[in-house]
Length: 404
Image 1 (cartoon, rainbow, N blue to C red):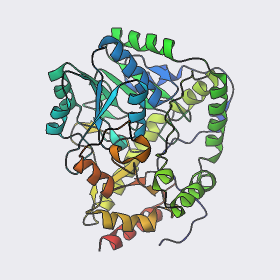
Image 2 (tube, rainbow, N blue to C red):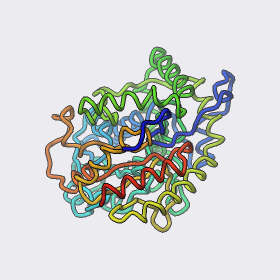
Image 3 (cartoon, helix red, strand yellow):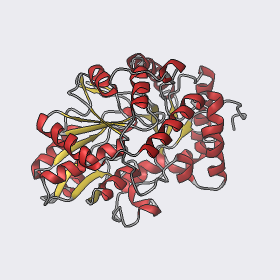
Image 4 (cartoon, helix red, strand yellow):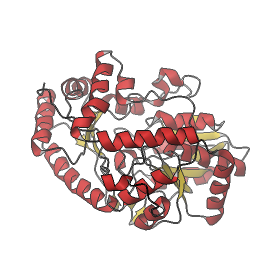
């Protein structure tokens, strides 16, 4: 096992905040700044990416009240299932393509019918999903497409921002996801009438709750102070290792979410913090992309590892690197060496959606062999700006030894 570290690398590459970002003075509109960077129509700011999805689902259900099913990948964030449930809709998990995070085309078409309200392709780990296939399957039954770009703010597809190919897209501003206001979300729609509906839906659903905004503001101050290699040991590394010692991987990776999504309006101070930090986002994305490509080249010299990269015409973001190992036994052997070592190695989600015990009754039981295989063989490596060449070489050598 790598020797214990006094500093902790994060599992994702978040844009570090600066003291000047926190200055309590009026700033530019966060939604306007990000929309200008992405080249999108106006963005709608919400309190989280999950709240953005919930608002989108409620808006679409207003348009199509007889449709009540939402098709999502069988391997995705449990918060997606919670949002569908809170919207009063029925979740339909779809199996994946073998060895990939995209939904399997044949399985997707079997999941879609005249009761389907929306299909939700996911741009996982900053990689660009196959939205075209989701669009074709949805259009065949008259359903909508919501692009889950929670992990892909700044990613592009054919030169355009992700989120523009479907009917609605959303991004997350949660801790560690590139630009962060600790929690936050951005909603996107090409059609002006749909944008108006999303805004109207949010105005009816989202209350002003000062207590929640105070909580998020304090958490953002903590994030600004501790999102550093020394602070992360206290805020992230030590709790992670306690969960691993208890044999609780769901808690270790942070998949144990509450069943109610809080809704409130983001305050002006957090918006101004995000807008100031956003000025550095394009350069940060480019630096992260360059660092990731060097890491990908090194990982490809380790026989038996599959690293997810961009396809032609895609330009993803790189909050972390997503890997598949040949089998679960060797993946688990690598994690036993690396997960608690402070090097930013982790798992993305622990289970396929039907296998979370606390989601019983929310996610229907379903045979999802490829989603379960993906959960069993995948791991992630944080693309932190604090990772040194020596750190990454330690990871690669450990992986190589575990692969034999």
